[in-house]
Length: 94
Image (cartoon, rainbow, N blue to C red):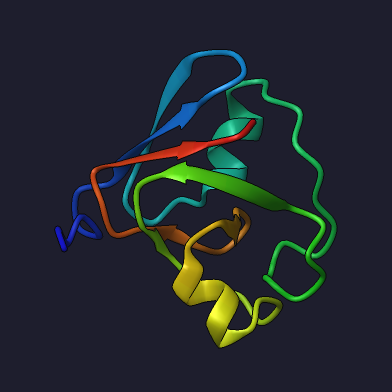
């Protein structure tokens, strides 16, 4: 796996075909909202599950407290408020 934590990564929004760079130290949620993308959220800390997004490609860096270990291992969804990416690109069903 590629360690991109120090560089950031690109989130591809499948529905709108937008590509948005998420800088090191920023969250996907914050970056998307800053770019005008309306995504649901509540707690912002990975505990409520409101910001869950389906992952179409890439490998999430799961940091939430919602998904089980098996769900995290499947890499089918992630909490965008607190989780990042282990790959340089992450495509989400947003």
